[in-house]
Amino acid sequence: MPFTTAPENLPTETSAAILNLLLPHHRTTERTHTSAETFPHQLRQISERVHEGAPITLTLPGFPCKSPNPAKVLGHLPDMGEQLSLTFLDTLCSEIERIYPPGAQMIICSDGHVFGDLIGVTDEHVDAYSDDLRVLIRRLGLERLSVFDLRDVLGGLTPDAKRAHVHESYAPTVEALRAEVRADENTLALYRGITRFLVEDTADYPGTRSALQRECRQRAYGVIRRSRAWGDLVADHHPHSVRLSIHPQPVGAAKFGIRLLDAPDAWTTPWHASALRRADGSWALMPRAKAAQRGRLVSRDGRPSHFIQDRPLGQHPQR
Image 1 (spheres, rainbow, N blue to C red):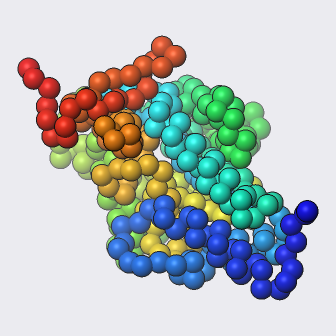
Image 2 (image 1 turned 180 degrees about the vertical axis):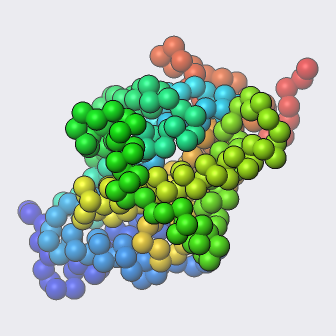
């Protein structure tokens, strides 16, 4: 039987039920009780689609590329961290379909090309990562997921030309962003988080630690500006989508922060870490160096995949 939106109150009830499926995975630094009503932007967007009886589209900018720091990741290609995260996202869409038959589609808006030059990752590595995401999605049969990246827009321009176009067309000015960082606590937290990642992702820096931090603070503004630009471009290409974010978001924000896997803080992602399977069968994300202290490396299809815990937490291997 086809899904209908009658009676009149069904969109509100169904939309709240859909949003309630997302709430347990909300990525935020706040500690407060939440309900569907505390996310009016998402509730409105979902309700519009439910009222039409149309599939719900979720866009998630992220999955850009692996960190260039080998102490954090296993290489430049997706591994078990991405596999688990993609499977989780597809499962989330299937849970929506269970209560709302038109279902949901998740578009992974891979943004590595947008700021790869600012984080020290080549376009070749970004291409390889994004291409492998597509292969992984097909191999795992994750039919509710797709990948959208900078190669899907602006025709045959070079990556540098595409970055320049996106930056010039959508990015806020550095002056406006600096003012926002000074005035808004959430933007300040984002700026500090991006700066920390840039410092941690930089390997073999020839200068001093203080010089690296100064440089990363400058680059952080560039990363945020490009990220904002990409978000606006994605909104133009997918105007009726519900916008998710891999960054922590406050309750009630226009973007809904979503946590992919268990991690020690709200900022960790599969592309900044490695996956460890705990002794109880659960999974966690952590830097490669830390995971290697807690378990043994497992390879799949000829390349490193994840770690399996073989000693209690905090116990280091004997030297």
